[in-house]
Image (cartoon, rainbow, N blue to C red; front, side, top):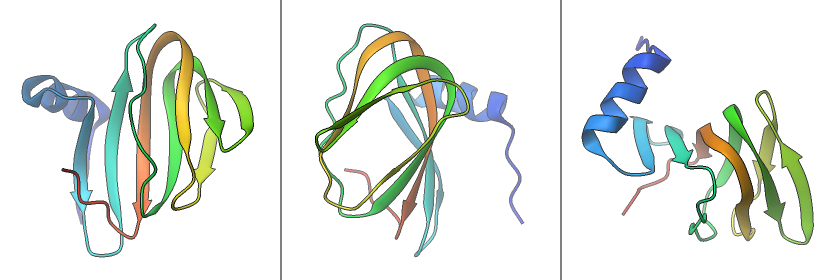
Length: 107
């Protein structure tokens, strides 16, 4: 078993830097913490894995394909592998858990 505290993950991400911090990486699943500052631009590209976002903090919009939806803490978003998607209109610093199946191998 592995056990994580959000505050510990946030501290480790601050130390390592970067927008995405992957803290679980198994063959069939990876999980990371993704942060975007208010007013920033999401530069991610479609992934080859299915993914689920769980919004921990912040408010923004997400576009998946041609659909756009407002998101806030507690929102859960499923994005199919290959679907174009972007966060936009980031009104408050955004913090999300990202679950990839199968595991994502960040560059």
